[in-house]
Image 1 (cartoon, rainbow, N blue to C red):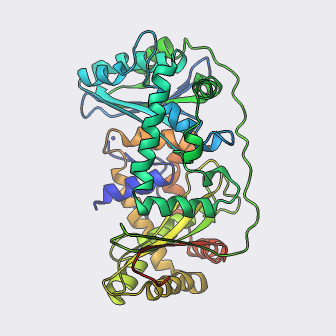
Image 2 (image 1 turned 90 degrees about the vertical axis):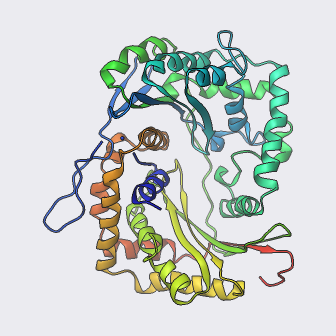
Image 3 (image 1 turned 120 degrees about the horizontal axis):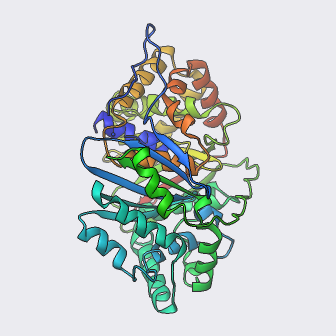
Length: 460
């Protein structure tokens, strides 16, 4: 995996994905100060409250156009799980100006690509098109922001589509099924424990009326963020944004109020045995703060810890479990601080041939315990930060990355300044801070352990 790819994944998980022109950024060094700046965006707000962000990249005459809504699966009412994702599908079912199915056909006919995705905290719609087709997709996207027309004839067949999507993506995939169950066990009360796609018994009863109510409640310009990355400047984009999005009236939007997790003191285990499992694995997850909920200052140290533990072939977990002990073929520790509420940190591994799962679990636990009890060194922290900051030099080298990064960050409570200050905040992390975060989060015993096993494996 290239350095740019690793940074992209880390910043995406952090709510600041990466990427489009060289950065005014230098690697960590005793003699050189790390400067603020990742994407260097321009921003303005329309009169109806819609935020607009532009990242200019003149390398090719292409743009990524994205509209992010500050609403996702965790904002759904109880009993209608999957409605946010269902509406994402229904947004392609047409307006009076653009009939059902025509949106994507028009984009493709004009040489572009489009799609959409839903998370717990946001829903986003995007198009990659030539610069001279930007106005076309802005016009169509603004149209469906306020003029979606739904009928029973298009809604209920699409409900069958998302039910089949769940079967294919989750119910037929043991790794995804155990991931869903681990999540539901980790979050016992918070809506992050409910799958984005929805629970099957609730998906089958979703109605057109519920979809329309969700649309009218949340899909309004003052609850949206427009991010455009590529061959355009804010000065060039602003008249188009005002023409198409600025003409849509704002509406009141409910406050994002969600229940919080109760205190849990017990360790929990989830075991899934399935005949389709060819590669067993172990996962262990702990609750952790997100950027927005990080009262103790653990988020950035946990990112550095993740790099130390899992940042390539010289990282602690890979070196110990794969190279030295030879009990695993892969091992990781990953952390994503991008969330509106709390987040999680997870470790995992897959066993080498012939290695019992209990032996792999013991080895993984020993590495976690080692970092909790003995901590990391100043040298490990310095090396990890240098890698992370050196990778940041490639953060603007792609077209879609900045739009994805900034949209996800803004939709989960960060500011542009937060994103742009990521290098400075990473550079400021100390070994003491990493060790305090490791003790506070990985030292907890209320984690969830998941074991994915083949049917014939009777051990746990």
